[in-house]
Image (cartoon, rainbow, N blue to C red; front, side, top):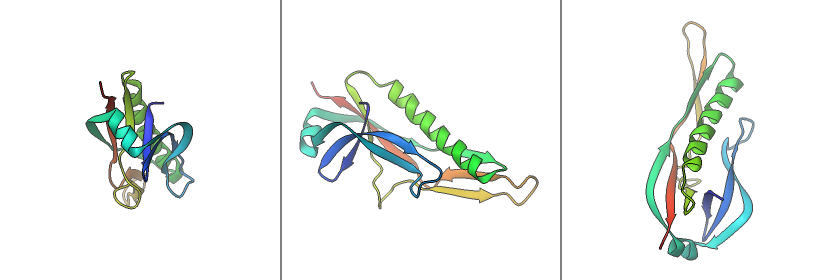
Amino acid sequence: MPIVRRYGKRVETVEPDFRAEAMTEVGFRRTGERKWALDEFLDEYAMVRGVDLTAEGTDAVQEKAEKAMLQSLADKLAGITDALKPNELLSVESELGKDYPRTRYERSTKGDQEFTYSLDRPLRVGIFRKRD
C-alpha cells in the first residue's frame, strides 16, 4: 500500500494506470485497499519531502515515443516506492484541474522526424512518514 491520493476529503490507496490510449495518460486507479478521512490521514502521517517527476521518450513512431515516456515515468515512480521505508507512503500531490501533468509531443522537422513526448509539468509526489 505505498501509493495514496487525495479525493476531496478522503485519501485512498491507488496504483499507477499509465496508458497511451487513455484521455488522461498519467492516471491512477483506486485499489480500495485502504481509505482514510483526510483529517485522520494528516493526523497519522506527515510529509517529509516532495519530489517532482519528469519523463521523456523519443521514437520515429508516435505511439512508441509516448509509451517510452510513460514507461520512464512508471520506472521513476517505482524507484521511489521501492525505496520507501515500512512506515512511509507515497502520495500523489498533483491535482486534477490545477497542476496535473499532461503529455505533450514535438515532432522534429529535420532528419528522421522523430516524435519526442514529455510532460507539460512534473508529476508532484510527496513522501509521507507515519507520526510517532
